[in-house]
Length: 497
Ligand SMILES: Cc1cc2nc3c(=O)[nH]c(=O)nc-3n(C[C@H](O)[C@H](O)[C@H](O)COP(=O)(O)OP(=O)(O)OC[C@H]3O[C@@H](n4cnc5c(N)ncnc54)[C@H](O)[C@@H]3O)c2cc1C
Image (cartoon, rainbow, N blue to C red; front, side, top):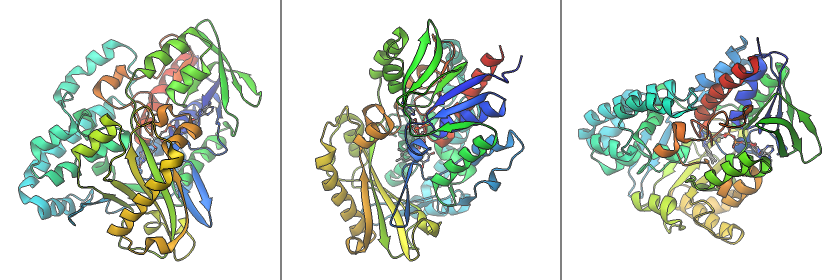
């Protein structure tokens, strides 16, 4: 039997939802994506203001091959729908004492950067890269697309976890090989991009550095929103349907089967299979709350650790800054202390570490001529740890962030602002139904990864599936695209049965 002629619904149009929908539609499953918001993309939402384009979330595209595969399945060429531009340096790091470090996937350039800070660490870096490459091979290439449905699959992964010293943290493994504290930060901070604390996240996630080195960092011309638009165009070309601006309010079940999906607008349809790309707690608690399984899973999930949130200031400026790279991290005076404040103590720190996004240096089309688009992001504790009124605190934090960017990079920033707005943890909750306003769903700790993470297919409801940051393997565009492959494999197998 083939799955052709079967009907599937994907709730949510994040990268994971769209990647899954393309895979299903490619295999002949008539697929409908239902999205709550007026635009697709989920965390990769966008706004256009005063001629500026502001992309909301993801800014660094790594492993484009994982996305290209979605087109190759039907012999299409992704490049015909979206151009990916290389970004170099891949990221600049700046410390308060003026030290700078440019990440690059050119090994020679990277070696030079290491030598500028601590030549003795070059040999250690080679050993670290070997560790990260092995972790990438097993943790990403082998296991990210494999659904972990039972404890046996975890036992099978155990030797690989042991080989990669998965019980140690990324920071501990980096510190084993690298002596200089700034270089330790330079090679461990990457876990923040998936919501993980470098001090506690399993060393298997050193794979993020290796993946960046292998694939480089890319930018879709016109912005991340154009990549989302390209995925939607490709899905619709294959015959898929996208419904926007109509949140799902209920997933109906009968016994241990999902039967129908119902939206706020009153649309209600029957499907052979349903996959949720929406937040995992929202899915079980709100959409499946009438079922025993929904309530049981919601209880279980709300006891887990969730990743931090983020506070983002978007701003458009008069002028251009060819000397400010596409990606910059402005480290603050503390690393370990700041991470503890965010991940453990749940306080708003006095010092800031800022990620500055400057897409117009790569792609001037995101702003009117002679102007520049930026966003400045600080990781902050999620709403469960940091219960503050963001309406009140937001404007103050925005001022602190802009003042710091001004002090360190753009002295007359305040005079150059054409437009600005902010995005707070409460917006992640309100706009995306993200539990506790978390920006990356469940924290990627070892005990919340693999089999311990929500499964790509529900254990009880036989035709209910998950895809996206909250499910295996976890957050990031490569992560959710790999997860979509795992989920699609299960769905196509089940639908063919
Ligand atoms: C600020 C920020 C920066 C990031 N930077 C990077 C980066 O540079 N590189 C990278 O690879 N990753 C990055 N990430 C992570 C990456 O963006 C995410 O992990 C990924 O986009 C999540 O995709 P997803 O498939 O889980 O879906 P999401 O993006 O979470 O989308 C879920 C969708 O479900 C919809 N939905 C929710 N409830 C309902 C409902 N009831 N009915 C219908 N629809 C519903 C939502 O509206 C949303 O569209 C970043 C994340 C953030 C927040």
